[in-house]
Image (cartoon, rainbow, N blue to C red):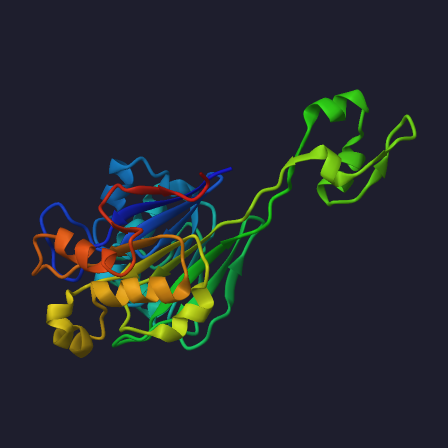
Length: 306
């Protein structure tokens, strides 16, 4: 069972040496989902061994450049590589126009693969994508342009069955399936087997939320309550709270407060303003409120499957 989050970039608007703008990869059992696609995302994929050809869904939080300027490059690279699978892009309204203008201007209006655009309503919390592994929900955020966070909730996986019992009782695939669905069965020898006798491990689904960019917004707590891991932007220190309010961003204290009020298990902070060279100051501010906090440094991999 695999559920990991890899940080490709988490820097705020202006470039900083060796730091990249927002992009993350979710890996669920070798199925990859991209969240945001700031400039340089492809280079980060190469650096950290992300198989970009396995990405079929991209989730964009909003249309500010530090979250989308890498998207046209990725789309073009897929075309040059002869991609034949459709690509789904989930984003606020306007994303299709942005991409089509760039493609038309560079003579690549006709791609060799299909892009399917899913417009996300940034004012509601709702299911936006589902497959056999995960459900993805929108999280309404407050920013200068329409913005949505994303909540990844893993689906319940089948429990593990005691292999020795399977062999001893010569259970059929249908009987194993019933037991995994918590139904009792009658074995070939006439003995009734109860699920609790056969199941050795019940898997607990995990959950991850991505919230960038946003002003302090306690309303989101009800959507992310009790999740395993939260990424929340922390662009400013509290000493610069006036700038946070003006730009509709959050402070490290704000991010930690959201984590605390939501009773999440872990918090990652990122999207730091370029004015801060010492990110430990932001970490210390957050840890004073929510101890289990870490910084979203490029290359960090968080294992929710542990």
